Image (cartoon, rainbow, N blue to C red; front, side, top):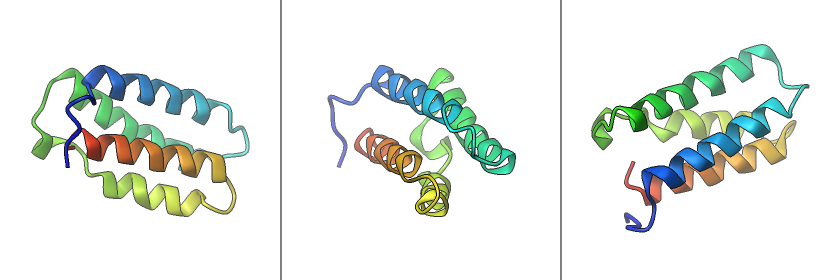
Amino acid sequence: MNDPDTSPNDLRQSLTRLRSELAAHPKLDEESRGSIRQVLGEIERSLSENQSAAARPPSSRLEALAVRFEAGHPTLSASLREFIELLGSAGL
């Protein structure tokens, strides 16, 4: 279910917004913050290197983080889920 209108630029813009939101959550513990940064960094590198979809990190790791943050950080959890949907619509 790829959306031809979802471009790598859309993904990069969403990634930037997600990073800004992450920075705005001072109560997020460093382990959680590091986990998100690691996955987002892998996605960013994949986009920069124009790797094939098969080589990109799985959205399942982001989904697990979204579930983990659901109660304590619902806004961040929702943003992660939106990004996961965008990745899916781009076929990643």
